[in-house]
Each structure stands twice: as C-alpha cells, then as structure tokens.
Image (tube, rainbow, N blue to C red; front, top):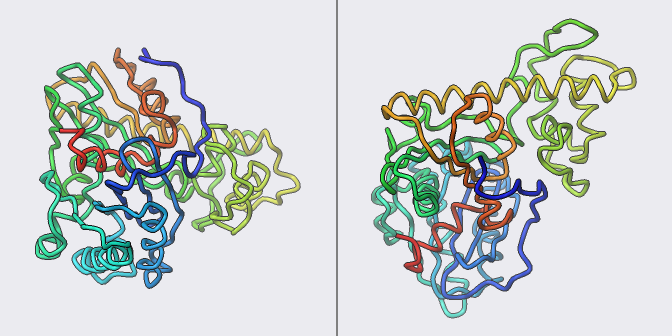
Length: 359
C-alpha cells in the first residue's frame, strides 16, 4: 500500500524557488548534472559528459553562479564516462572542474566531496582516494530513504534515466552488500537499466509484431525513454532532442523509433503495435528489476516491510513491486518531497547532510 497517493508523472527541470546560498549540492552524472540546496530548490541540466567533458568547468560554474553559494558539496557518477581513461582520472577531472567552479563564485565557495563512507572531505583527500569518491551518490540517497521510513527492514529503489540502485536499510541504517560499482553490480544492488537512456536492444532481443515475435536490430534506434513515453510512465518533452535519432521526445516520434528496431516502415507500424512493443520492453525491465530486488532480499536474509521509491523511474519501480507481490508500505519521494526533488534526490540528500539536517 502507498503512504500517499500516486505522484504525477511530470518532472520540471527546476523549481520556482530561489536557491539558499548557504549550501549548494551538485551531483555530476554522465548525462545530467543536478543541483539542490536541501530546502526544496533543485535543478537538472542535461549534459553529455562523454562528448563535452572539456566544457564541464564552465557548465558547473554556470550552475554555481545561479546560487552564489558559500559552500559547494558534490557527489559524482560521471567518472565512468568513456572520455576518461580510468575512473581515477574521471574523479580527478570532475573534482578539478568543481574546484574551478567554486573559484568562480564571489566570494570563492568552499568545496567538499562526498565519499562512500559518508564523509564530506576536501578536494585533496578525494583526489588521494578517488575510488572512495567514485559513484557515491547512491549512499546519500540511502541515508535520506532511511530517514523517511520508520520500519526496521526497508529497501530503497532509486530508478533514474540509466540505472537502478537497490539498497537494503536495516534499523534506519543503509546496509549495502557491497560499496563500489563492481561489487554492487555483482550483488544485484546496481542494475544497469533505467527509464530513458537504456537501448531497447539491451532490454530485449525480440518484439511482438503481427501476431508473432520478431527479432530486432542490434542498433541504437530506440531507447527506454520511447518505451515509457508510449506507456505514459514519463512525460513527453517536445523541446528535448536527447533521443536515439535526435528527434523530439514525443510519443509520435517514439513510435517511429520503435518501428526502426523491427526494420519496419513507420507508416505501416501503428500506435497500437508501438504500445504493444513498448509493453513488451517494460515487462522485460520489470522482470530484471524484480529479480534484482528479490536477490538483494535473499542476500540480506529478510524481506522488506517498507520500500522507498525514488527517481523519475518510479513507474518501473511500482511495476516491479507489483510483480513481486510483497506486502509492503510504499514511501514515494515524489509524494513526500515533490517530483522535482525526487529526480534530484542525491543532490537534495547531500545538501541536507551538509546542512546537518540529515544524519
């Protein structure tokens, strides 16, 4: 059951509030940069790090200047982007870019980097311990999830554009089975599937068409964003062209992209057929996430009584929970804190930690 009503699907890129200058938290991902002040202001800026890594310092400086913060705290996942020769190199470059952004603030902002052990440390320490700073944002969200559930056995399901994070929470404390991404993928706590950027060819190997299952092209013709737009799980964005073919993020264009997966003529591929193909993909993603959740539960030795859903992929999270049939209380970050904050949950949680609001 839900603790509150279903949340609306639409997520805007920023709130109408003004950023409080005491703290600005930044989450540097490979495809998006998210910022928050921990008090309700958030922003989400699409940024293809693997293509524009050299523009990262100026992009971060632009975000910082909108807040003029006295303190910047940061977490990251973008260090895995293939513009970097290694994760360590990625951490060094992202940290240096954050330092440059902090120096652009008037007066200069203090900079801290979040580590996997829950500490906010100096840039020098983060650079000295790069793998402790790499992919640390899930840990901050887990601390927020722990604060929002009163049960002794809970689980965080955070689904974004690219990945799904699953974290067990025991007696109000995040209790991961592994800490780094290599280990978390091995335990099922990190699932490389999301509701926007996952290629359809990575989700399924066939799709239904004309009463039979047909093989699909091993091409980047369509992504999970097309799937969930057609199923109305995430909203269209006609102004966004961050799609497989560079076309608009609309259901009509999504139908054309799914037709290409089957090498079908878009004119003869109906909306009904497109929705059936999308449903097939959604069910495959649902099974993948549900299996991972069940695996984490088996490894911890207990089934959660409460599940915290976070990120803008809650449509997928709800399906996975329904497939498992767990009798759990669902805590939705979108319902508790708002859709904007839910999408930028790592940055929001980190800002709360830096302010001392969140333990």
